[in-house]
Image 1 (tube, rainbow, N blue to C red):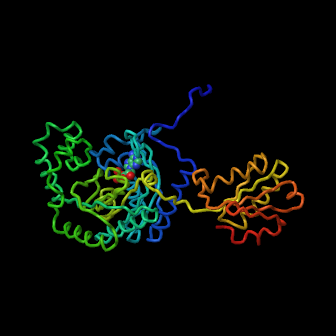
Image 2 (spheres, rainbow, N blue to C red; image 1 turned 90 degrees about the horizontal axis):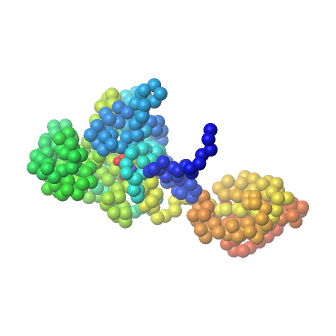
Image 3 (cartoon, protein in one colour; image 1 turned 90 degrees about the vertical axis):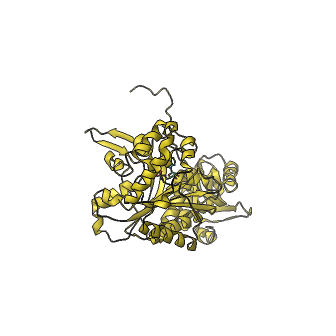
Length: 434
Ligand code: AMP
């Protein structure tokens, strides 16, 4: 093996998460587990790669995701595999494979994990990104859509995001969807000459996908397009009206918009996005909707379903509050190498006494003064430590302490300092955890 000469960098469109950033992601995921768990949702983990045909047959052949953005490769036996661009197809595949007909309904699942799309990287858009999502299967009524949206707002509220507004639309299904597609084609066809190649293909093959276009000319043509809501059959309209009736009563702020069609083929009826007003409308942090046909499309019995996927990277970027739980730091500072063993023993004892504290030994042996200086930074600068440090106590261990088997404890918030026998640690530390 030759020496590596050029410094290797992370692949384009990926980003590393190091502390404290990684701890913020972990805190968001812990909040998801708590809030979704309190609604009866259990975690599902599916493979990061799946058979390519799973996505072609669910997300849709003509969507940008499948058409342009998939990381597809052949394995050593020539099987076509794809790094998952989203997680719903994998979850449904897993349930069908397990025998969804035998799983008691409703089925409530959530997930968090990386997704992969070959997109042009820019702010908030990566090639490997993380999504947190929820799937509710087996509930046909708008009450299911409402539960999912209300739970979503509860989750985002816990993260300090309160300036939220959902945009909701209803996409016709079956014959009504075909009629809407035809009407859309009739509206756009006279302008076909000014469409780009991609959008012309969409016009012919899957006109609903025109709503995904970022081309300003296409967007302008769509402004006067027929509205999805005018094409709903009676049952779909009743579903949509019921949802609109439920949402405000559950504290979910929303507006209705015919322009939200969403870039995935499996959606039927309800689709929604949620934006934070502060971030601006183009920065949707999540999308979701109902996918009543997907389970059957993937070989299972007809099963209604609704869910959403949040872009976790964008979510963390949008958060202004620090959701890492506040911790007390015990900075254990041996004066020199002769105190290292003593320090490691005292640190272990404090950890056993205060399981929620962060107990860290400064093992550089550069003296108590320098160790104290470093420790005192953490409460003032929350991003210098992996944990969010609310309070700092220093445990000073010099030769005197080691020889007499004592401990000097200094509370950096008050400056109060006391030396006492190590055996007194339990009573001296009582109540110091927070
Ligand atoms: P989608 O699966 O396309 O409905 O996307 C759901 C959410 O995932 C979006 O609202 C974004 O927050 C996030 N997302 C989608 N693509 C990316 C990407 N390339 N980079 C970062 N986040 C993304």
